[in-house]
Image (cartoon, rainbow, N blue to C red; front, side, top):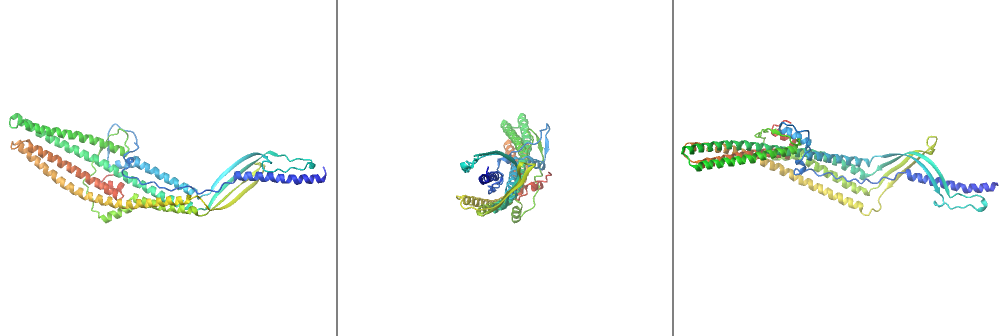
Amino acid sequence: MSYRRRILRALILIPCALCLVLTAALAQERAQTPTPPQRPAISIRPELPPQSGDPSYRGSVPQGQATTTPIPLSLGEAIRRGLKANLGLLTSTEASRESRAQRVRALSALLPRLTGQISATEQQLNLQALGFLVTPPPSSGFSIPSIVGPYGYQTAAVNAQISLFDYSAITNFKASRESIKAAALSVQNARDLVAQAVGNAYLHIIADGARITATQAEIDADNAVYTNAVRRHDAGTAIGIDVLRSQVELKQRQQILIAVKNQFEKDKLTLGRVIGLPVGQDFTVADPAPSVPLETVSLKDAVAKAYENRADFRAAKARVTAAEFTLRSAKAERYPTLTANGYYGAQGLRMFSNSHGVFSATGALQFNIFDGGRIKSDILQSNSELQTRRNELENLRGQVDYEVRNALLDLTAAGTQVDVARSNTELAGQTLKQGQDRFAAGVTNTVEVVQAQQAVADANENLISAQYQYNVAKVALARALGLAEENIQLYFNAKP
């Protein structure tokens, strides 16, 4: 082969080799170079606060195994069990965990992303498909193959994606921190709601027990009158209608006792569901000092304390702040972002014996030119969300004031009612005693006694209802002040 022919072949093969190298490098870079990070599609929407009327607060997850003997259950123990097993609190706690997950997701948009890659490539190229259509002249005596390969190489590299500046992601992360705060406060609010629900359910049982005791005492008194009427009728000093009248009164009281006992057992089932007692577990309750008086609290101090301590009010303010950051994040989607991408590794025909270091580094400034109105829609949605949160905060501000005023009014009125009802009970008892004495002396018939018995029953019911309303008002005040978990046990001298 002449010297001229060798030069011509070299001039033809050099571009072919360069084309193969560039094609392989381009394919490798496409496979290894990470795409620039996109804006994170994170929407920080904190959960709404739990409501006292939520059915989940009347349910629970049963804890433990039932025993054959009834267990003693104080108010403090009932609250402790409720805070452990009530479904509403458990649901709120899981919602708080979801908020923490959102925070981690928002933080990940600001941190570098590192990935490793180990690959082995076996490749064969069609030069004509890549546009290499050079055909040597026939006089050259050689030809260029259209198919190159197969050939292979191995690569080990670390890829990196770094967000140098993304104001939208930064404000999203700030919004997630406020959402975490709101979620934690919502859990505290849920604890107060559980304490309130447990307190009300427990007081129902106390009132039912008082009704059973009062009704049983009324039955004993009615039975004594009935026995006396029968004895007098047998002696010929009373007519038959006196016996019938006293017997009807006795039967009515017995029916009332059956209904009250049934309600007592049903209210025990309700409390068991609220606090998560084992299925079928029986228990006994203790009267939580219902007559413990409360110190007079001024309206101004009570409202100020409520705004300071109410977890739901503080959570609402945190949700407003989170919504403000979310709106800023939506507006910041128009701002440019600065990112860095790259990789470093080793590449060669044999990784451990014939390889060389390879790397790539890219800095990019990305900015929006036209997005079809997507950013505008995000801003409108975030603005609407912010206004909703502000409305909820102002509504809750008024609700807190209403609940405090309402609880103080109920507490004052119920306390007065307890005093009046207790006095009326004493008077009704004296009236009944005199009516029974008059009947025993033959001065009157059973009409006067039955009327006195009904007056005693009404007075007992009014006293029980007044005491129950007073206790419920104390629970409502503890909740309105935002310290239900602590104050309910304090107001009733209940030990946890």
